[in-house]
Image (cartoon, rainbow, N blue to C red; front, top):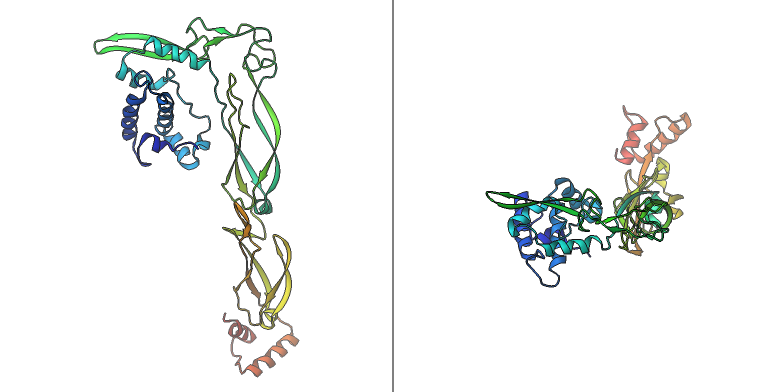
Length: 374
């Protein structure tokens, strides 16, 4: 599991830009491979650089705070030891110009495997699909390793050669002496675009890229009980890695469509049922819709407006524990007619007299109000 970027730099989540820079400088001095030759120092240095690269950019930091690493995807790359870009000025002030040994390290790394980028897919689900889960077919477009050149980018039978401009480092350096000391400007090699290699005979299928965009179908399993904003990770279905590197992952973000009849409150399902005033007074039984199908609901005699009745274990399965389910909560609405027939009025007036209710200016509607407390 990836470590938290704030934890890596040893700062709080509300640290400002200056705190981040100070923490980064302190750790970079300690773990830079030119200074620290201990096992694991280089990997720790890469972690520190990655964390600072993300947290020092407000847009990336905001996405990381909301979604974690999936939110930044390939927006930021892990800087290699020699691939500092904007970080070069910091390290030049620590160590002066980079040594030849550092350049050799860069050459080896640039020719090595690179992990593919992670991808994001937003997927809409119907209400019942989110409740019960199941298998879902999706289509994704991602980079796959070219099967003709096996990712080298060169025509079969040929090989890439080392770039003569940068000697395979992928970078060019320009030293500049000033009254304050020697500074080295590092930039991407314009000849090989930072790859460290030149392809003279490009593969006809991928045009020398070593990868090609492909659309494929995937079947993924949606767990029961998922909700808006839940995220699924599909390992190895991101973009293909370069030079034999592992592929990235696919992150599927779930969004649930609203249902015309049911609403959700955590693992409980909410709905409403409308009954007549006579059904409320006398009580009744009838079938109502649930996510499992029809179920019998008992309305007790004398049920009041907005009473909530509960069907246990008819709600949403608990995510990660589908045996445990919520309840279905039904709010009872009572339909009081605005108009009644003369026969109904006569019967209701007799009922009012039996109850001893006085029917005054409000007429029989006042009787309804007294019966139902409205």
